[in-house]
Amino acid sequence: MSKKSLVLILLAVMSALLVAISSTAMSIYSYGNNTHNLKADAAIVLGAAVWGEEPSPVFRERINHAVNLYKNGDVKQMIFTGGVGDKDEPAEAIVGKNYAIQQGVKTADILTETQSRTTRQNLNNAGEIASLHQLTKCLIVSDPLHLKRAVWMARDLGMDAYPSPTPTTRYRSLQSQIPFLMRETYFYFVYLIFKI
Image (cartoon, rainbow, N blue to C red):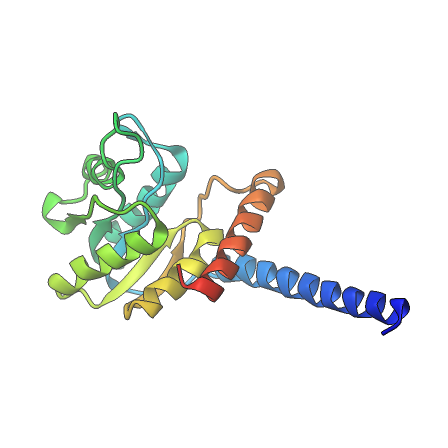
């Protein structure tokens, strides 16, 4: 094979890879920016960082969205996910629960799991809780760019799951969206190949 042919093959492979990455990134972006007005049994709120006893701004917006779904009658219950990130902090799910109660959600309508550390663990553990409480249809609450991978994972786990993106995501500027989109595109491919 000539050097020119090798270069052409390499360029073709790189072009195909660039097209695949770009189209995947665009599909992740558009998926999370399509809102669905669905009613469900529960909202599964994916965990995020906590700052001591308070949710981080990213987590707070996820909780606020879930609280609005609950108050509007779109969901009957909320499932908070997330374990301990820093050993000196409470579990993400507990912080989320406490914040939701302060916003007027009934304690009896909140379920938690405090063992997960990853999105897949969040969803697996939340799915077990939903099944135990006979909650069949669930809305996955997270930032828009996180939802395509999260909903796909939930469905792979056998859940009747639908996206519910936070309308007040902290990732609004181009400067914050691009790194998050790049990260999500990478993890989307990792999940596609390895299912982790």
